[in-house]
Image (cartoon, rainbow, N blue to C red):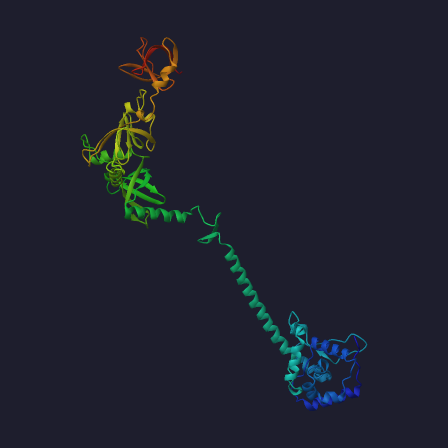
Length: 487
């Protein structure tokens, strides 16, 4: 870097006197920034160490306007030398000035530079462009030189605000991009659920409750038939004679009065009707039934329904309705699926498309059973064969059905396994006036006579000897030769 030529003390004193004559007492002194100093020194190097004469200082106003394209002369238009008194005054105005000695052969202790804190954390005053500096010098004369400290602070503040705005806009853009990317997620309350295929299939608790309410409302308005399981039988606290069935549809409690849940029998056999209906309703615990909603209280989560209305709607559709050819949908010799709604010792009651049909014990199996409750339970679905349908009274349709005839007769195959004169092991299934029935392998019974030492208990393992087989009537008989009573 070319050295700056040191002026004589006489020249400096003359500059100071001339400056004092040209500037008033209260005028602010121009302070060179680091960028201005470096710029002026570089310009001086390019001009081959050109000296700043006293004449140039006197005509700085005219030269500043005339030589706008020369960078070194514009920078030299600002005052470089100051007295010790003026330095102290300027340091007090700036607030925190410090003297920076010139590194090199010369020691310019009379120059004051603004502190780094006043220029901003990022040194924004040092990064001012050359064109901005030239424009400032052209617009302002030597009598009203702007304070570079104030310009630096204003520039620093505007840049800081611009950075904050840019950061805010950038943050908003990131949030927008993140929101745009999450197209496969569904916001549920305060959380998000990420769907596998972009559409949520699994239902949340809120969605399930909403769908349950829509099902009940649809059933109430359109007569849609809903299906549920009787999970309880309750009586009102105010009226113990009134019973009702309880069905839960999601979070909603569906109540069905006993008068709307079961059909009253023709003969109450001397008992109170409410007691008979309560017993009938209790025997149907766990049964799968149809119902139609009649009223909803969404706030309390309770709905009222009727089972008899749903049964009437199904009977009208299946027993009185016809297909395209004009045939009834349910007819004789038809096999259909039925739901067991009640089980007693002598038989079962099934719901056959809106009609309760009683099936006795003899039509449940080809074997001899003593108790139907050992083989069936409420809520079970079975196959039945419709034996007859009586539609003479459209309001009172009668149907007979059989469970054993819906399947294959096991005697036709099982009788081939046994031969007369041989012995086989079986289990005592029933004892009646006809004799002792022993269940053999294959689902057939062998009728045996009573023993002289006493009849064996039901469930005992015995050995029988086959005495005869009738393939036409599907009958087999024999005699018990050994009894293995469990200890």
